[in-house]
Length: 401
Image (cartoon, rainbow, N blue to C red; front, side, top):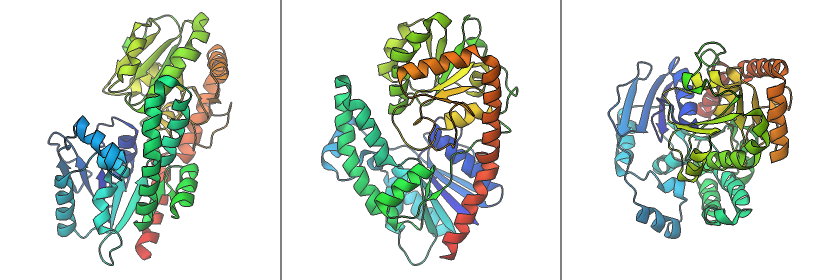
């Protein structure tokens, strides 16, 4: 098949969950199909050998005033306006004119506006939407969490405005695609119910040969602090990640003081709301790193204290694939078909989360056995080599329609 992927950012190097998913799908599909990529990038990038072509467009500028104007006046949701770019629209039109693509896969709601002029045509490629999240539901969970704290009511107001716009946008746009992909059964059910589409599940995945135990040396800067090392990874200007780290730092970590743990927060662009954590000697905001694998290798425990969001978390897949013990919330580990105490530990209150961390750290033999069960689970169900064939089957079905 001849495929075109539309992505909001370069998949390499993977700087966030969306890029990890996009890169994994693209790399696996490119082994058996002719794959072209159209994406945003600020600097010229050589075409990777597994791609038939790479076309990049500079990220469009968007001032704070323009964003505020859109928030108040434009009917489209904020995410759908974030990357508005005539240059991207022109690049897409040119590629469609020059290539006879079988399918075009649109990665994320930011890229949907570029596809809208082509949807529903009798001729041309099939158009597939890959929903990295059920975006309106993500904002609902953020709204509920932020309403509980007066200091976050401004964020709650943003979510309240966006929920209605996102639901309308998803409801109007998604049925026009030839196929819709969701990352979890939960998201597929939401999109099917709200948008009247037959969403298929293609979960997030991981290369379990790459993310393997003992494959990487431990990050040297994580050594020498005395107590156990706890790790949180993710894009640190992403609202659910910021909320989760603050909740863990304020309500969970103090309960573990007798164990003398250090929380390492690894991820790009730490939000200013996290600045106050820099004063705490048992918290390290590491920021951007070239590779997360050495930090996973060095961690005694990976924590996923998420209270808002949707979809599935690649941070959990990576940690389990490297056989690291994981403690997370039910929401943070959603969509992965895991059970408390089998592949990882689940806890949803601050007290329960602290107790789960404590028991995992104090029972290293049980924790190691649990982590190996987690790795086996990932290899069986969430390796890209297992996942991609189901997507190819859906491609064939959509092409036959």
